[in-house]
Image (cartoon, rainbow, N blue to C red; front, side, top):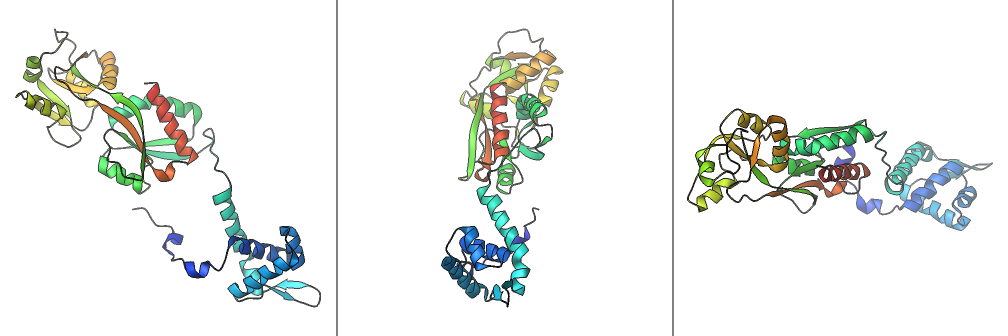
Length: 313
């Protein structure tokens, strides 16, 4: 469970806080630093009367004199001495948070990114992405998480996952997305299959291996076959893409796989790829992120790497 930073659990008294504005905090910081209304006015390039007015407002808000007159000059009150370091820290944080531009240099950056995706997409995009990482950002690390769509999208919202890469993801209004590439399915069988095309009869007679993220035996092919009053016999269902080519190479089964991963495995394992005898709709692989990270330079850099990886599949 993600812990809540202590400052987020503190209730803010907005009514009382409205008595202050940033100009008053700046005036207070300079008055404490200079211990002089005249010098403080000169430093901020304002009139002495304006600075005196600011001091008067500060005395009312803080219920403290801030500066008191002595026989020689002005000196700080105990409260002013007490808050000077914390006040400077607050102003420094405001400046760095709101005014200083974020910088990101992948060559020296140290950051971990969490990406939820399937083993198929990891294998498809990972080769190029890994090459880019090792050449551009030696200290950046990627952690791949299992793609459970509902949990992954919740992970985006809870800031536990940086990117979700997949198809048909359940987007919410605060999720941003970009399409990476379109994919289609091919039939994968053992290389010694004697034909160059697979008939519908051959297709339904063979035993089938199925990749299912729903933990069942129902794939997109079932709906198409039902319309033709046919059915296939699925004997193996798995949420993983990568074992399928190994299982196919050592059996008489057939499977539908995304074309890109099937082509890579066919070259390495001597599998045969054929067009499906039924019309199977393809899909689009997209990356999704929370809108809070849209303008973060490190996240934008990572998303650009994935776009480049998709172009170079």
